[in-house]
Amino acid sequence: MPSTSSHPSRRRPRLLVTLLAVVAFVLPLFALPSAGAQIDDANTLRVHQRNFPSLLDPHQLGFVDDIAVVGLLYEGLTRLDSKMDVVPGAAESWEFSEDGLTLTFHLHEGLTYSDGSPLTAERFRDAALRTCAPLTAGLYQAILFNVAGCQAYVESLGPVGEGTPVATPVSDERFVEDFGVTAPDDRTLVVELLEPAPYFPAIASMQVFFPAKQELIEAGGEGWWLDPAYHVGNGPFVMDTVDEDQQITFRANDAYWAGRPALDGIEYRYIQDNAVALQAYQQGDVDIMWVDPSQIEAINEDPTLAEQFVQFPGTSTLSLNFNLREAPFDDKRVREAFAYGFDRATWCAEVFNGGCLPTTEWIPQGVMGAVDDDTYAFDPEKARQALAASSYGGPDGLPEITYTYVSDDPAETTRAEWIAGQYRDILGVEVELEGLEFATWVDRFTSPDNFPQLTGAGWVQDYPDAQNWLSIIWACEATNLAVNVGYCNEEFDALIAQADAELDPAARTALYAEAHRLLLADVPAVMTHNEARQYLVHPGVGGYEPTGSDYTFPGERGSLLTLDIQR
Image 1 (cartoon, rainbow, N blue to C red):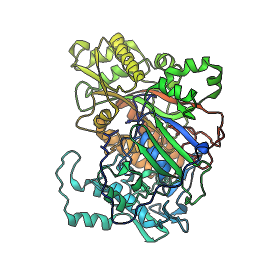
Image 2 (cartoon, helix red, strand yellow):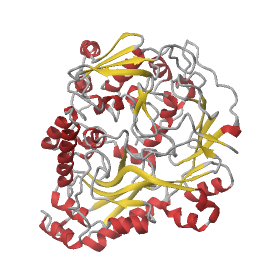
Image 3 (cartoon, helix red, strand yellow):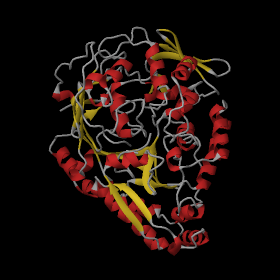
Image 4 (cartoon, rainbow, N blue to C red):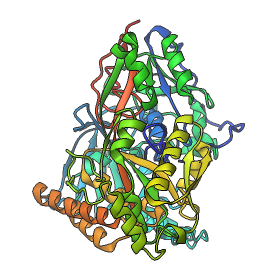
């Protein structure tokens, strides 16, 4: 999932989207669930968050700040446990056909939504179908392109950017009827695949299969996702209140199939300013605080805070992303110069106070498809040579270059200034800085027609498979990143298509590694570092096992049922 900020300070992207205005909703004619019982504050986990969600529609969103919310409210057919293994979610079991092209899920008996209404297989079909609907325009649509009929449905409105629908109601009906996800009965969901996909049970855990109620979405209108009344889900928690830009509260879902969570509630408290967040933690106003790397030194000097500092490796990669459609980064030599010219070791040691691991690769070590490739390691001389060999002949021939960043956080401004200074010192290039509010930055980042010339962002692993690192990010049709930056390599696409369908693990790994090397050789971005996860955690918080894919708080991915707090 795209991370929400340029570097470990975010949020992902936002990688992201403009916050919709809160509007007065017209209540539907059917009954809406009422707010639940009063939450026990003593058993409520208060979590510091950085960026208020830009979108909470599970079939459109794609950024970690947003997923951190809907992941509490909804559950897919499967889920990932604290070992990042695929385990039953709404489905109690599943199996592939002998040819690997049909995947059948069997739901638990008696599933319900948080309001007690029945949850049937048809709801999961609705989720996948809505994800693939062309007007949904979700960031994760491409992850379902191997489902029969999905890509054709997405493209039924014509190429991205045309904006003039060519589909008719008749064609829409045909796409719906031919869609490769069916529900032959209330407890069975059948997925027809175009190619074998051994990783697909992990995809079934994601938001593309979150069964948000279609009738509530329609009743709520454009901004439905910001009103708790329209979020009736099947996850371990229920949205209780929303105070825009300030706080979102959740209460335990008594109807959750696997049993009630240990916590009575969770509160997300949104604080952009790092110093204010630290003060809130020290005053006991939050139980878990996201730590910015600029705070590590001060935390380590405080005996109490140092004892409560939790740090573990994250499965995520940050990068400087080029707009490959426009000058000067349509010239590979210029991209090479910027890759050679980035001092990753100093970046991590000084700018991030040791809170990250320098990298020149996209897939982190230890993940399928990882390679050792230091071709574009820091080398000032090679950087200057590459720029001189470009079509611009050196720094004086370059057009103006602008680095766009999220300016809500002063730490991001400091990092942007460091980046500009790096390229001034190494390449003699003056990089202009453009600071944007988070929501505006999200709009730019998700717009192929208005993508920044140069900006920082990253990727947080959804599930531990190279397909999640390559196919849904860098394939020509990938709406998460490749479409936005303008990256497309047909040879790369052929390799990942072969790898995605390969059933032999060793052969799959080799194909992904080959594709990974090809990606790095294209220099579509400057890979900068792998993140560390860093938090301050109240001594009373327990019952969790951190994973590298946790982002907003430790235990987020695999420990929601067992997390607890003793005050």
